Length: 78
Image (cartoon, rainbow, N blue to C red; front, side):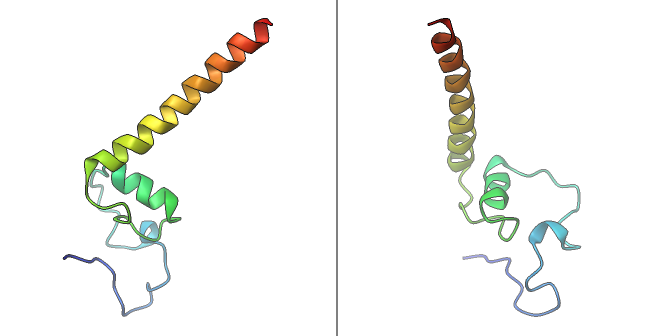
């Protein structure tokens, strides 16, 4: 099992997004982005390494937005 948590140093309570070793212009996966969102930038692997988790949350967000737009259009007519 691999962990990226650093128990020593001044960056112990610093969000991952603001650490020097995080921003190396590497691409983030959707799962890492959602992990950072849900944990307030504390952990980038909280949802695991599976691509399915990122796709699920992205799909859920898109479906919610589409459902909201369709709901407004349908109920605005009546």
